[in-house]
Length: 535
Image 1 (cartoon, rainbow, N blue to C red):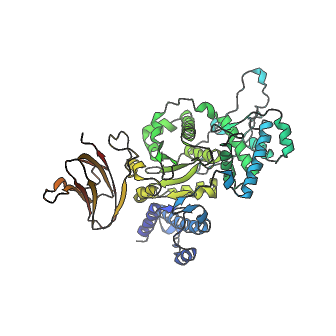
Image 2 (cartoon, rainbow, N blue to C red):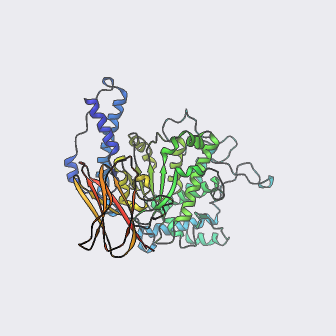
Image 3 (cartoon, rainbow, N blue to C red):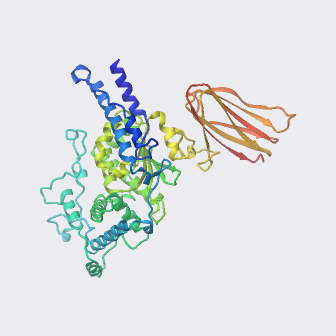
């Protein structure tokens, strides 16, 4: 009986929705009063190892949720409002005094580094430019991928030793990065600027001399809590990495892996206008997809390059770095059928964290499995507190409900409970949907009034199924008969997710769509319609 309770607790911990950083609806004092006692951990030798692991994970997950709620309660008011993350302004005039000062300091550092050509990768030691074409040393993670024996589930971050040939490695480059973070005087900057320093671009935006430049610099400053020297170190490391990785050339490269679009794809926008990027990591578990991405070292490198290429194109095509523009994305990570992430996935996460700061408006994890809590704790040290405050977690039963808080149903893909699907001949993402909650043992009617001859088309979807559905046309004239459009029928998970109906209206009246929820659980009803001319 005790083991059964532990298993239930682990499942409950994995399926609950947790919004990290959102304004708590329960005051902090009440949270402390209601804090339950942590379940006792039994002796390992008295129970199977698997059940002991589940018990530990359940207890740690519950403790983590309580700690986060208490920790973020004090600062959540300035970041969230009504459950929606409020991004800071990209207008310099809206910054605080210390933030403006930090931005000015960072600009001085950037000008000095541009004049001193500090954003150029170091030449390989012992090589002469006259001996032939310049060949950059490839990144360490591409030259020496970690072996399976070395990978014990811990991500080693920037631990690289110097090569025997004396080439600079990550540690050496980082020393250079830190050394330039000394604030120069304005006089010194003017002196070095006379040499005609070349401009450096990142995401197609120059670091200086453009109205978009401030938005880019603010991303690095916010990622480093407005410490100008640390932001400069991060910026320089990102620019050097981009040159080393060959990002600009990568944009024009055809990697020949269109099937990977099922793993990561852009689709629609959220309620605030942010582009939405979906990562479907369970797709990588199929034999064919796994072979395409991870069969050998070359394919692993290609997968990493494809992921960076996809992100770079999304940034340039969908984001706007002008002051007041939308320069962040909402990211959705679908963990259904996903197993422990491969090294390549964890490496991609680390690269994005280091080189693409403040591009996430919200990170929503859906269909989270039981193991994800352990993985999240392992990865948390690599994310800043600011980044972690944007995380939202939802189990399978809460996936659609959670997404609808941030994305309107007509822009949510059909596989996640919404209406959006390709090649729909009648509706687009511009056709708004109504989202209703049907209480247990309640019949919900949706009435559509019509005053002229037309063809009415409607779509209806019930999340949770197990309801009965019918439709009828009721004429406005009292001496006319009601027309049965759809006889009452039971809807189950075996039916198509979206029901579509049409009716040719020849006189004024109304279409009544009826959904009866006879179950003991509430249901979500989505409905939208369109009127077309009968001609």
